[in-house]
Length: 453
Image 1: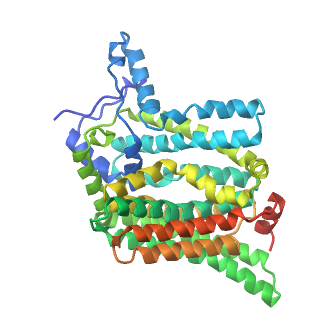
Image 2: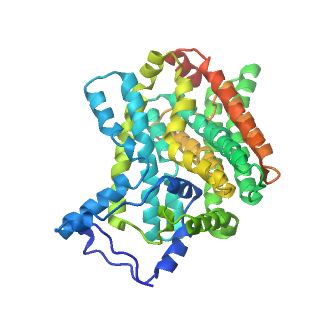
Image 3: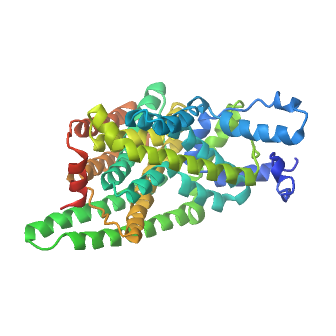
């Protein structure tokens, strides 16, 4: 058993080599730092063929080319990378808001997957705890960046609807399609999953739902009682946001430290999958790029995500008007689907393989992260920026979220699955999507609804 592979970038020759751990030990520690999010998107990765690069005479150039190949060609979504420069050209050449919006959404799909790949590479060197925290932070980086950019432009409708849509997408679309497809493919097999981790996530989702319902109920009560509603609702929202963030920090400590064994079913599933699938990247027990390279690429791709997200936020209203649909529909349906397309596909693939613990880890984990971390974080950031954003997501959005969480909790209560459960979740998502599709109000009216009483 040899030491781990040296960083391949020629800029890293002077870096201290991590040679104290054997490959087996590194593999074991690395898998303890992986999240279900990372496990799901590995199904979309592919091995890079370095045969041609091995013939490059200059070692430094070969190392750089190998690094580029791993980052850009190590995914089955590489075909979508050209959408990124095309979106930038469309923005500067004024091709139209609809084109810029659509191309930016396409460009975000491979970037989100590559961010997951890079955080996994970094986790090889940082250990399980830091790796787990990094995965928890970057797991929904696209949604967080879009929300913060929309918040900076005071597009409260886009912020609230995109975050609600992300939770609904994970609970109803991703989980529903996974259970439906997995149930049909494994029609004569019993599909089971670990209830303990589902119960933990369900409890947090219900807590998050309570914190979103309280400002809405308080506002209606205040208006009916003839007392001031705006300032108390905003104060209540900020208190609830702090409660949600504290709960999420406790959840991370629970997941990564005290009760790690509850979530180890995911790791066992992916290790079993490594034994069965020798042609996937999962079978590697070493990092394929060095730590400094991974950090540089992570920062660079995050910057590109921020650029494309700025295009999306800046053109969503004009694109919605051009297509004849509401901003709410684009924010609740389109943005979440595109932002998490890679992990969504991975979740369905693992459901086909009857590995529902990973599927649930993706859908429930992402929904919990958005509900308990991203949503309250945007309220706190808005507070710091002097922007009035509360947790009153209005009646229609909150009702949709309530039904989504309720149906999901009932679906997972017995620890088994079949295609009918997935179909019910999918049909709930279709009904909610239809509701926002027929909602025809102008962007000014939507902003007024989310800013006013």
